[in-house]
Image (cartoon, rainbow, N blue to C red):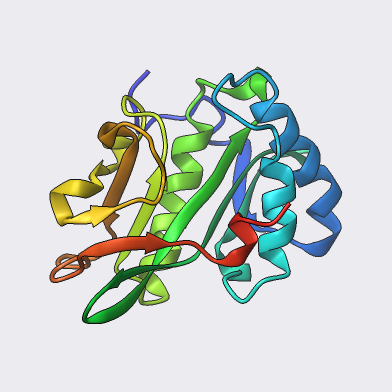
Length: 187
């Protein structure tokens, strides 16, 4: 399957999450990460904390919904900062991207990423960062964050910390350490 193809393209809509979706999204996020060995299995709690934080951008909390109103995927982009001695720049953090296990590998995650990028750019955001799979995210334009001079506060291999410019020059002059909002650190 081509990266831009989605098996469900004609039966799927990507839309902004609504409050009545919250319990279904919680289930989707939990199930998406239940068999991921690198996960701490609290991604669903992160989503809930972010919704209550200043970092939350309702327009960038999206669901993939099958016709028939079944939510099968979710993506959340929230505000993070890249901090240097010159100050800080607000960019977006992608966390998490979730697709139900039985729907993974069918292009739904890609649909969510592309739509989230498009909406974020339309809102004026220049870049997004993530901690993710080195073989998956580069197909959406992500590169090692270190190539931009951006460091993450985690002890993980460099190829898992990534950044993408949502607009040309979106990371021009942006260097430093990623600072996540408190919602990422609370339990």
